[in-house]
Image 1 (cartoon, rainbow, N blue to C red):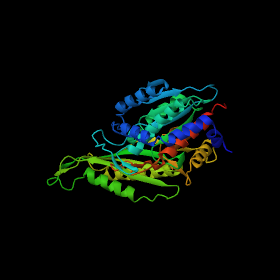
Image 2: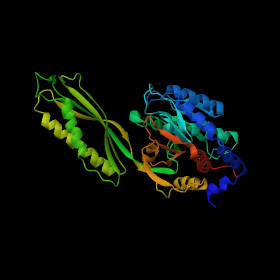
Image 3: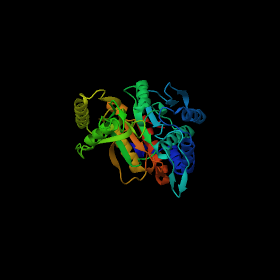
Image 4: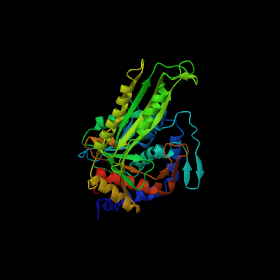
Length: 393
């Protein structure tokens, strides 16, 4: 009998697990309530206020917001002899505040921007705390529940960086995503993000025809990057996600820019990709150096460091055992770009797990299938209790 099975046999835990099995409707209602509060990266304040009020209503202690908008709440241990366990879910979304957040239902499937990523994760955080407090499940380590900001876009994991700074090297981190049920991320994908700017003298589309056009030069850069060969394993990717520039249709653009995302499962491959892109940019600068008023610059705007713990690590094994206990037959061990990047990159114990099945993340037709939500919550409870240690009585 493994540790998860021993914990699940405890009478109070059995009651808590049974309660979670019939909580799907309530958890979904909480997820929708969270999803209806706009929370684009750097503008999570309104959602943070709601989460803080929920933390207080649930009965967590030491509830507080930090300067960034991370919300913290503590469940104290019965004997604080172990390092704390941090359970976190990011509160921000990729969608602008003006996005239509209407939720539509199709049986067990629910559609809505930001619903899976990560309103369901935050709802899971709240209901986990409510379950532990409501069933008086005593733990040997303090549990800190954290709704953190800045996971998406150019947030650069700033919320989780502050969390790790606060709790340090000895804490254990469990990161919750609304989707990804059946997947355990114990490897952090390295990410480097850049802004590439092109400037030229510009001019009139007719009268100055032939002069360098910043948009045309930016297009040449994108084409050159798109010709780069990257390996399928370790998976390595590039993506131009945003382009800007120009003023009017009949003006030779004097400026243009793009935002570039580079990723790899292996830090060496990421470094090689950054070098390859840097060479393309330098070649463009050399080519334009003789043209008056022309320049190409590359500025780093984000970094998500890589890191990992082995599949044999006790926390990964606990996550696997918890999934198997709740009936998950197909478990995937994946590399991801999540809040877990920060602790993993510093050699700190962390995993990222999911609560239910989802799809179309970062799209307006994002959806979750709530069928596995009860099981996802049960595995989260068991993993949390196992990581923290429970009262033998």
